[in-house]
Length: 340
Picture (tube, rainbow, N blue to C red):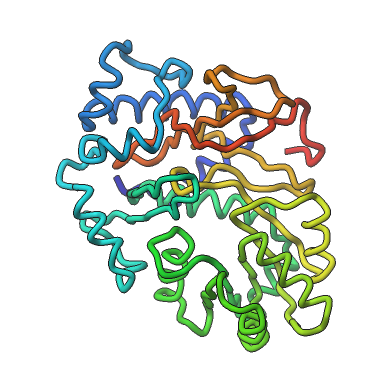
């Protein structure tokens, strides 16, 4: 399942240049491929899709899935028949193994359960490659040439501030970055640490890239304005919760650095990334996002959805197809002023 990074880099470039039709074409092709794969290798999906026609390339035809049902059928849901829920749970119960690969080369993750039930998920190599390629696409839009030069000159030190102690996406990414680049280049701080302790460690490390939860960044902006925090990041990349519009401006002003964010989930870690206007642009060549009402009917652009259905077009080991993410979104009814 390993994909060529170079091949996918070229493909996302072609997709961006090709516009809406090129993206829609990739959506249809990749949806058909992953639906066929799920039917062939997952007993759960074989049963769920038994009455569907062959060659489905329209997500609206698929029945809706959710975390509670999928977790109850985990061993039948995964397409690798050697993987069991008990084995994955045993692996993620060991915090000493954060950053390691689960047998089979998979990345094993859990969610915190803030939505009512912790989820257990696997990402395959294909998913990890798509994550990296789409992050490069975001960085291409986010970072100016002078910022690149500054990052290179200063050594490219990165600080992640996130929930630690569990097999969550951020600490896994941090552990692997530290393994590749060294702890002198990559710092991982606990989001629950006392603010004064966090400020002291940041002052000592002087990150070039600051990647905290949005709420933590808002606190750090106050510390920077007060003079207790004294760092000069080249770029700030926020995750987790969103902020009011003036919240991003406040962080930007405090650090005198560009601030970017994304919308993602453990079920699909590459949903979107922000533009200079603070709107989120969906990576439509690799994800299908459907804003719907309480009956799972499409809602009009400009209307807040009751929930949103996501289809991850990359992950084959644990297909996420028309999955109720329990989020609410609004799709802009007109073109974004950024021109993308």
